[in-house]
Image (cartoon, rainbow, N blue to C red; front, side):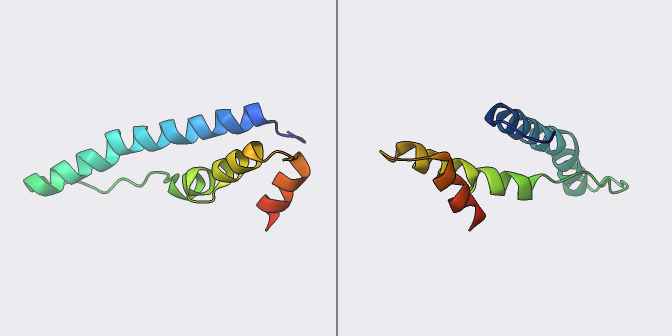
Length: 86
């Protein structure tokens, strides 16, 4: 896309959260269980979306900054972009 909308941000955020849950449920928890029980296994590498989620939902992440700008009486898109750029 040349231009992403707020709706696309929400879709991407939802996808990242689902990916994190899926990877945890399928890979991390099973690997932890195998290790605890001493079951031999081959390590499986999988995508980690923690960095993307920290960017979006972490302290002063995109969602925090967006929420703050929406609460301001004279909040604007330009101010939001300026805050995100710094």
